[in-house]
Amino acid sequence: METTQQAEQQRSARARRRQLLEAADRVVLRDGPQASMNAIAAEAGITKPILYRHFGDKGGLYRALAKRHTDALLDALRTALDAPAERRRRVETTLDTYLAAIEARPQVYRFLMHPAEDAQLPEQGFDVGRHSAPLLRRLGEELAKVIEERVDLGPDSEQLSRVWGHGIVGMMHGAGDWWLGERPCSREQLVRSLADLLWGRLADVSDRAGGPGF
Amino acid sequence: METTQQAEQQRSARARRRQLLEAADRVVLRDGPQASMNAIAAEAGITKPILYRHFGDKGGLYRALAKRHTDALLDALRTALDAPAERRRRVETTLDTYLAAIEARPQVYRFLMHPAEDAQLPEQGFDVGRHSAPLLRRLGEELAKVIEERVDLGPDSEQLSRVWGHGIVGMMHGAGDWWLGERPCSREQLVRSLADLLWGRLADVSDRAGGPGF
DNA sequence: CGCCATTGTTACCTACGGTAACCCTAGACT
DNA sequence: AGTCTAGGGTTACCGTAGGTAACAATGGCG
Image (tube, rainbow over all chains, first blue to last red; front, top):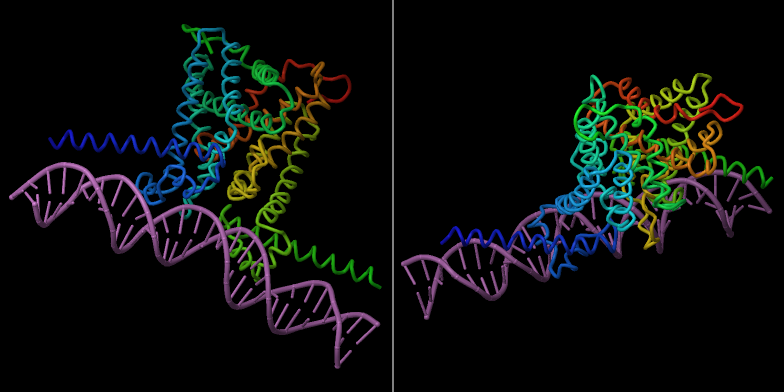
């Protein structure tokens, strides 16, 4: 049948795509974000045009690669955020999960945060932060959702929770980036200090009725 | 005399350098961070090799340019941070100063934060965040200094203040980046929300003996 | 005048993103 | 069988951008 045949083809195409992404992953892990398309193609045992057939352009490949890692990290963070423990403990676990991830694979982290200028589409205005944004934006929105679900912020809670979500993610990111560069203290210490910073305000906000609170 | 002559030369070289930087500034303001060396040279009315004689490589030019803007922003922030007002008001003013700056010149902001991969010096290990770092690092250290000077954090205050400095700067940066992209609320609202987030913890830390406290 | 430092230019090299044109092998159809 | 076509693959190329070597002009200074 032609349908099974098409399905077969699609499946093999997806499999190939995964192979290619894995090769790209290895190269990025080795060379950092400035990994060249040639290098990736070579690692995959093929040549450039195939990469372009699969991913369109470098930005496409990078987006696909970033999505994999972002999804993985987000999953880990979600479980940490949803774990059955008291609020403060969960915050610490979440921070620690993030820091452990960036500590374990700095090259991947660099790639996700500084994807080496992909699109230079002419002038689309104030789109600041299209580059390092995707991961941080997704994290921020995710956290905002969790905050709004679980904490009673009073009126205007939607906006406030988003500001806080992105602010807290920014804090985690900024401190993490600095820490990864200088290693001025242990991970545990960093987690505790950041949680302390957050705790002041988070501590005297009352839980929303029902649910274990953020 | 040769000394005056040398001085003269140095002075003119510095003046030239300033001219070139101003030209580069205009181009970056117009084209964003991916401004090419050719474009900058053209804007300055000369050709590439002169740029290279003055700045070594693209990274050098970018660093010089970044330093100018970073210094300017840092000055503005320092005055906001040192203004004679109560602590909370100063925090808000500082946040607002930063946000107003990035709002006023997004292209410059993008350039400072995402300087398009300068150095690809082979393998210098875990130097994550060399790219967008300089400005944020300087801000973080500056804030850490202010915090440690003015707030009593108990033992281990040096490390804690640095973590908080970089954390808070990260918060400001992250939230600002998101806000600049989506404009979900007014600047005043953003400032208030962020200050609220910080205020919880900052509020119940007692001032260090002497001085008006952070 | 002749020397040399400064300032500039042209012309080139390299590397990379991206693409066009072609090749080839495995099946499907007659 | 023989032909035709779809996919996966390659070579060879283009444009652009960073970076440099080699050479020209200008202007003080012995």
